[in-house]
Image (cartoon, rainbow, N blue to C red; front, side):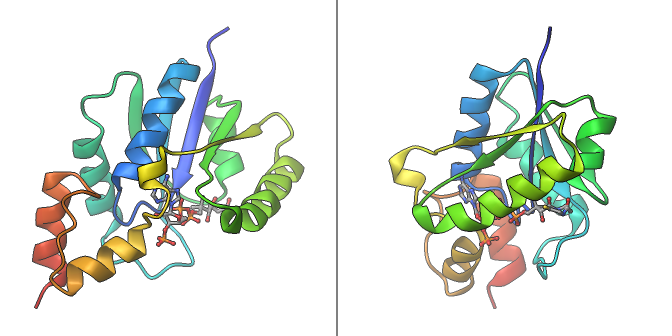
Amino acid sequence: MKVTAIYPGTFDPVTNGHTDIVMRATRLFDNVIVAIAASTPKQTAFSLEERVKMANIALKDIDNVEVCSFEGLVTAYARSRDASVIIRGLRAVSDFEYEFQMASMNRQLNDKTETVFLTPAEQFGYISSSLVREVASLGGDVSRFVHKDVVKALKERLTV
Ligand code: COA
């Protein structure tokens, strides 16, 4: 049986840490869907279309990955795509409490889906989209943290 996994998130923007998680996931599962949330409590710097476009560019060299956007509950989207796995990245102990809560809530909402946590390579453990945006907005070099086209998009969007 083929196993489809979805990797949901805001991806504002996609970083090399996210890409590292996607690569690991594609080694474990037959299909990986990067599911970009349309509605998120976060005030995003990039529109949904921009976030999808950047993720498509950053992930274009990885096989078995599809980038999609979704509205509403991640568990409903997983059901609609026949995904039995939700991937989440765990970078540090500080991620754990929130992730544990989300995994438990998602299990209540859809017990046919299991959350699987993957850890990124150590050099990506401290990256987050908001830190990347902050560094870029203050003129710092973010080329080690994001794809080169994302660097360009950040410069255009955030620097004054
Ligand atoms: N590398 C780099 N950064 C990473 C990372 C990795 N491997 N893993 C996580 N992060 C960062 C993200 O960049 C993000 O940073 P930010 O806060 O600075 O933006 C942060 O860790 C976590 O964000 P992300 O992975 O994008 O997840 P999220 O918490 O923004 O996404 C959703 C949450 C979209 C998955 C969640 O809100 C959701 O499922 N929404 C749909 C509605 C729903 O079903 N709600 C019920 C959930 S129980």
